[in-house]
Amino acid sequence: MTEHRTLRVALLGAGSVGSQVARLLLAHADDLAERSGARLELAGILVRNPDAPRDAELPRELLTTDAEALILGADIVIELMGGIEPARTHVLAALRSGADVVTGNKALLATHGAEIFEAADQVGASVSYEAAVAAAIPIIRPLRDSLAGDRIVRIFGIVNGSTNFILDSMDREGLAAEDAQRIATELGYLEADPTLDLEGYDAAQKAAILASLAFHTQVSIEDVHRQGIESVTAGMIADARRAGYVIKLLAICERLGGAEGDEISVRVYPALIDRDHPLASVHGGNNAVFVEAEAAGPLMFYGAGAGGAQTASAVLGDVVSAARRHIAGG
Ligand code: HSE
Image (tube, rainbow, N blue to C red):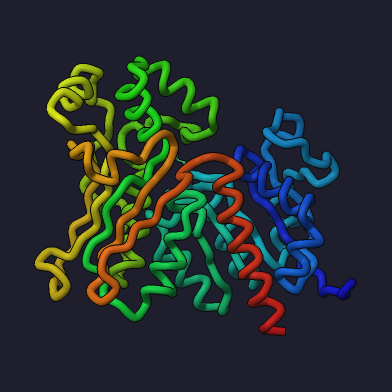
């Protein structure tokens, strides 16, 4: 077997995504070493309470409450704590120590993206965040890399899995909103604070991140016009069905005035979608993102938009890329 250099990986957070990342890092260590060219040693997992129950069984000796020591010794820091603080402080500390950062933290990027990317630029470290938008669906890399030579005109679609699950269950199974929300919680779709999903903040954060990448300008959550699904009732859903529509929480990022336009509009709101439109067939916790680019034309990205293992897949892709960069950089 090839001898690989070892890179130390610090994992911050062991919630539904973090515990799956840890499980997969440990279970697939040999495969990940072959693919990345580095042995990814899970140096520790930052948790608030080492005795709390977890979605996956994690080695007790890896759990720590000492963020500083864990971050300082790491080559790659995976931040999956969510929220702004202490995640922001830890990410900045990681970047200042020269570590590459992989994060799924849309709230952090949508509010402090400029500060984080500047800190990374100053030391030549990378910040990767495929998991921050639409979980398992590759959408960040396509916008940042594959479409870097094109001019994006519009992005629109469903970027929140839990509200899609709730609206879909109310529409197709006639579930009450509270029951649908309870199941979405059990499936690990909702944020720790469910109002972030229900009031459209989560989708707005993702829209800000997509718009920033697509239009090469820093769009923050403050720039996003937002309306959630809290006022959507079973009666509205039934009326929409009778009229041939389905209600979906849409995120739209677009250049006003088409490809030549420089003014940008970013908005999130519940919308009536014709039942024949492909977005009407996005069921459960799935997401779908349509991208319209000047030369490429329309593109569609579809798949699991929430869930621990699904989001962990995107995180691990970023970790492998960061490890490859480390190895290439010597
Ligand atoms: N709460 C989020 C959602 C999780 O429902 O889409 C994935 O980002």
